[in-house]
Length: 167
Ligand code: MG
Image (cartoon, rainbow, N blue to C red):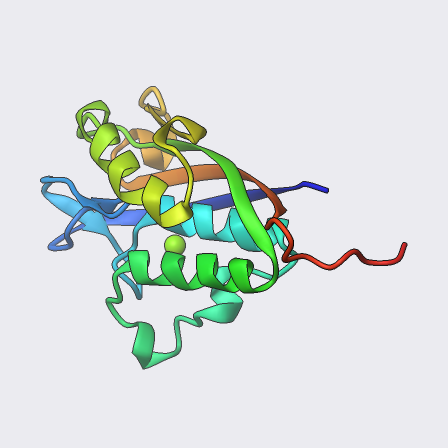
């Protein structure tokens, strides 16, 4: 049995915050406003993973009212989500993502994001899609005031781990 999950996230971009996407620092004059480091790509991925496993969403598991998660590196959140799924008997088969941001150009950073995220997810870089798009100047994302991400993941049972459930 395989499962599919969908994740979405959006963050305002403001001066004085570091831009971190997919665990990679990208030099830019603005960064995402957020309780954590605001890594939009990781948040979308984490929600897709949790959704596929029927485990809720990151807002439930890591509430932004909890001071423990203030400015936390989102890679730590993703690591915790992956561990949670593994414990439940799931393994990640593939992930595909879209990052929508007007500037800066993200294409030069995609390989670095894959190098960070694929091993963390336990998949080959070829099984992780990261596509950088712009919003063609439309709306808040098009004005450069926000970054938006989508993620889709597919899970399968860990070999010998997941018990068969009765229908
Ligand atoms: Mg977020």
